[in-house]
Image (cartoon, rainbow, N blue to C red; front, side, top):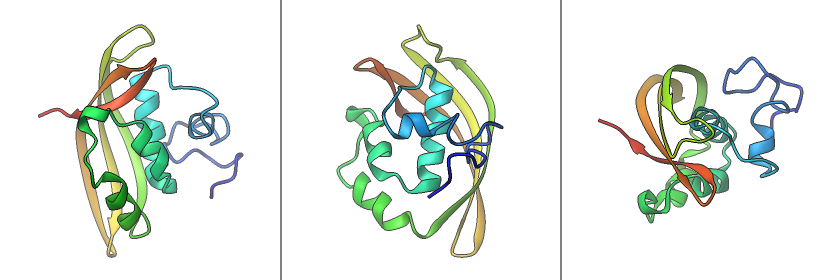
Length: 133
């Protein structure tokens, strides 16, 4: 587990304690879609399966999502995140989009994942909806 004073894995330039920890502990909900996306990246980094499941829209939650996360969390090393842009997804919006690039290693090979993620409000908070085309 990462220490509170260490840099947040989401590369926000804040410590984990100032950034994503409060979301992972359910002390607060992210105000923006970009905050949720960063907190989800950090949850992947830390292997926080429950958080990833809870922050996925129920309409998009695949039955095997939890088991897939459990199976792959120890074989994937997340090594970098760059948020390229975001639109909407502010405190008063109902939808938001975040374009990002994440780097990770699997089986000693480095990979790059680029995604235009879509987020929606659900029960008073932001949730991941899907990847836009």
